[in-house]
Length: 516
Image 1 (cartoon, rainbow, N blue to C red):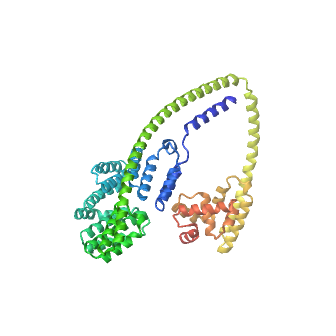
Image 2: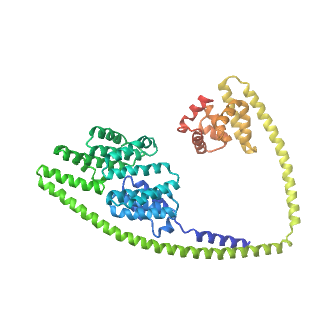
């Protein structure tokens, strides 16, 4: 026995030694939920995960950096978001999380191209296409095509952008489980037509855009970001036409959504405000917005320099962490091999000792004693079976009598009494549930055959519950008949409704009465 205990102890040590991860992945889920409402809170969740990440959230590091990048984007830390997305692509690819790698690549493309006009961004667009292909994500590939229209949009080739979008607009509209693509398409169409001074088409797509505000599949932050950008576009349109009152109106509307402005939109907001107030000779306000614009430029520059330094530090630390992880993995493998070898030796010793002492055991006397015990139990079981056969025959006779009663209420009362009798003596029955349903089938065979044909996934107990519910029995009565707790019956009613694809357990009785 001591050898068995030693073996089990060593086995537990091996398992504990190999399990180094803690349950920190829940913070990633919390950050994902918090993003739509409070990006700073999402960052706090992510910062709660201790380092090194490859020990705490192995397999989810790519997603960690992707969510961090989104949080930086929404807190207008544009320079920091690049390092997060770059690390997300790197780790997600290693983890074979191709959807996350593709999403991060698309974010890198759009930010590099839109914010920095960097042509190297196309490298990440091609990466996104390859990653989506690996994950067989057809919707993602459709978004890659939408990015070509986005490029034309940022390069002010508005007619080309419209052409590329309109070719696939119906496809974007038909993606019901994620209306973001249709939102982005309508945003670009609206903005393009505003810049083309085609207000008729602009208002058409603006209406489609605003209709998506309450769509549950769209992140409210994305909607508000695009909405404030369109408002600023409208202010520019009226500013160019010297319609200063309308310009100031749209700028006033935009000012209420400052939290949703990205850096380019904020820059335009300050610039247009500076020009508009200059037109109305309010030089104090004009200078205030000009100062704000200059301050913004300085902040962007500082963030860019800071992020570049941080990126280099993160990359160096990542390389060092990777080397440490490889070394630890090798040491762990060596220890596991040693422990396994020791375990094998102990098992071999145990087998040897067992064989040695096996001859000394008095197996014959034990087997003989067991034989007499089994023989005694067998005789008792024979008597018990005869009693059960007589009992079941008596019950079946009562069932035939009940089946001959034509009055429904009287029959239901008799069934209730019979069920109480069965339940009261359930402790004396073997396979009581099987006998129970066999007896009830004789009362209403068509019910059990039809419900089993319509819902084969139900268990025998669930068939019984359905039958009692049809007879208008209460939960507590059913619990009494089946010798179950009231909570158990309520849980089984819930599971039955789910298996039948019903909205909830409250409509279960109506469904049974209607169909059976």
